[in-house]
Image 1: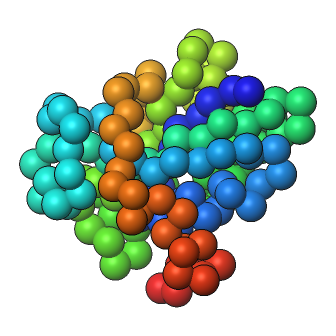
Image 2: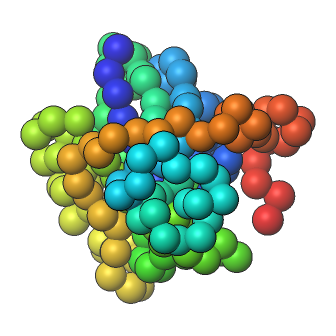
Image 3: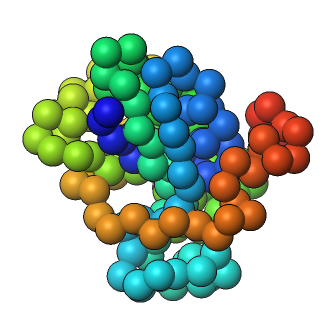
Length: 154
């Protein structure tokens, strides 16, 4: 198995998108990219911890490649809005790709350059090596699934 980590707004919706991709074997939502240890949802929502809401996933590279995951990332949100997705505003909703190793870093940078032509405004998504991941509270895990939702109702 291989790992990937993406932030593209509210982690509930991001998780639901990646769960549907054949070859993604597990997902977990949480917080990454900040400066506070073991942050709570309330702390992250204050925008004072520096964390983004992210989905960490494992995937089988024999079934799905990283490029396909990147394509899903670019197609699932607006990577040209700084610290915002739809009605959700704050640094925790920023667009980010946290990479595992040089190959993912290179592929992410190339995909960003390729995706740029699809958007009217410049892409503001961060691409950085994976920082420490803090698992979100249990009630956030598989949230849409627990609510009987398929996609974000907004």
